Image (cartoon, rainbow, N blue to C red; front, side):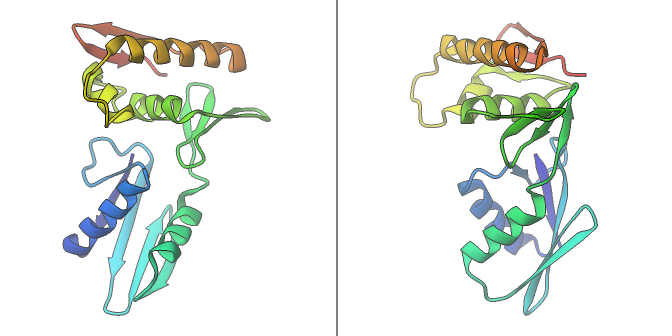
Length: 176
């Protein structure tokens, strides 16, 4: 997740909910911020976004589409090492050398959560709810099938073995 901070918590909350509606991996807390920090600096007439020492200024008022376009441009090239693979959470891709694999949404969400909860693991039911938030009944077998499919995909595409262990409803990804 990208952690977002600001000089104006009220306005930050509004932008946070806009980003969540578009499924951007953002968080207001730093415990799951493996993708970096994005700072929102509000003034009376502008919003400046800062990420990795790059600043983008948006003159206010601005359209939501303009905000998303600038935000996307700012973070679209952010990459994170995933073992020997490179993961781009915005483009939803995994790459190694010159080969790039576009992930299915389900697989992207699994990897995003695996990286965010790498150290302590997470409950399988919480992972299920992240992937399928509208399902009324939780079917852990459905999640297990997608985990196996992702594991096989990474092995076939990159010769990378995704290792995870599951115990008492908790899943821990062993990512180097």
